[in-house]
Image 1: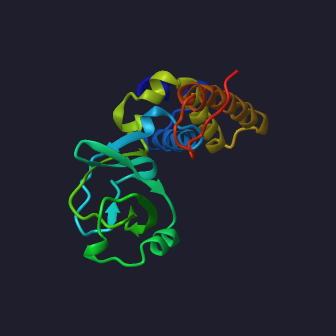
Image 2: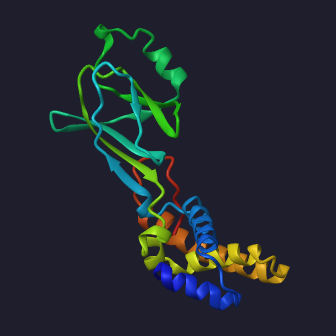
Length: 214
């Protein structure tokens, strides 16, 4: 379902014409709910860095939400970093001098700079390194893209999420709001079976959502 069809269907069900800004609001609110309920493949992005020699802080790309995996590549060999907290890194590597620099083995969430997140690395890189950072980021909204993975593959969740937001905006009857919330949650459950279940039967690292599939 593309954005034009989505808007038309919402207006048909609600029996009301909405402004472009209202349509965008309903849709983007529904998308954010969905992307924070199910880990869809369209959330995944890759950054290749590089890491900068002597700089222990790596600034994540714009729009970064969280990390799936972070690997440092040296001599065509990938070393996957373990996620720890800052206290662990400071305790394990208390001396941050050039003699202690090397190939990073750990990372921790350090803080934010404006709207971007910084990760602390340990040990501090002794040279520039290429990386493979697989991270989550909200996909481009169907509002601006016209068509998206979510709209094409899981349109049931999208339209019911948008209808739920639209009917709340209309101050619809409680039973109507409850009906579309129920339909939305049913669609989310089906999405989780696919995205968090069938697509994650052999997840190597912990921390990623995974649902049992019968």
